Length: 390
Image (tube, rainbow, N blue to C red; front, side, top):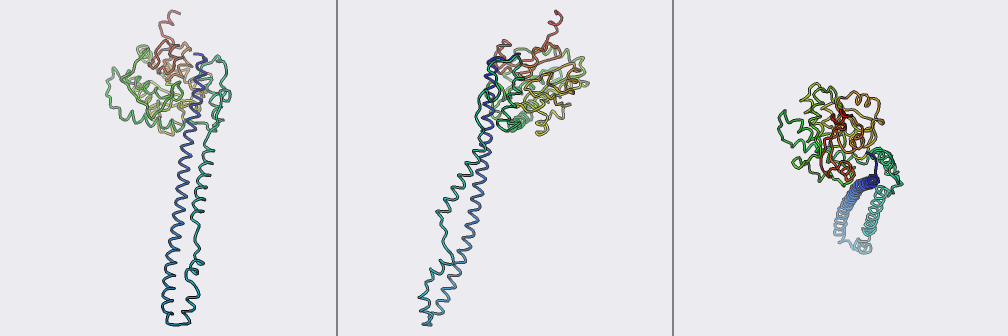
């Protein structure tokens, strides 16, 4: 599937969304720093008050001693004259000068203001235009995920952040774990593959790189409302019967948790099947990387072999994969690719081994497939019947 003008517009929206996510994250971090700094100032102020309190106590003691001394010398006329000639208040004031509280408060407020302003300036990323992030004026003859490589490399340089979605990826994985942990569904062997595939594609709702805005905190995983525009499970089962090796191409962070359920079911149904799970080769949007899996102790690490594909795009492009990943891909009997980015890169490969499992999330893909936006798909790239006719 080639890039269209709508894809370019969508890519720029994604870029602006990335900028906002980074800006919000830095603003939150700046607020935390400011609060900590203010708390530190308050603590230092409290310490200062403690010192003043100690000084006040010593003043009271000194005053009591002076009073006692004054009383004892009251009978002596000479001492009376001396006592009246030297005012006590003046003596105490000279020993313990009053601090200017107004000046101190002003200094404290000024310090907070300067500190808060400097943190904000450090946190605010610069604005940018489509030209700044290398979005061309006309669609190039390549799939959208390939074009996204240069765009997100430029964004990383502008924002000085090679992985701006790192925190959101961790949140997505944590929420996915909570969902799977709470899932209490018993399945029988006859329908377990169907269940595994549906659980896996349900995770594909997680996507910060789609045309529509996404928020993991408000995300609802609803299996009951799933509708498939295509569901080539019969062809997949036929392929799996004689398959020895399967490549499972991952997509977004959080989906790996859902994918682990599907992988475990595949291993139960097909015990001799070797499964390799592919990750992206570098951070791009919220796509899963090997680093994300290890940083968040993903269950997929314990379900099958995990392979860094070396691909830096938001979809699997064979030419960009490292030699190790290519060799595994070439030897696979079945390839199950998750997500719309993998669909955009693999839909034209004309390879019957490839099955695409994803949710339609944008109007361009919906029109291309002649499906409604929001439907789920399990689509074989080159159905056996079409190959037979060729």
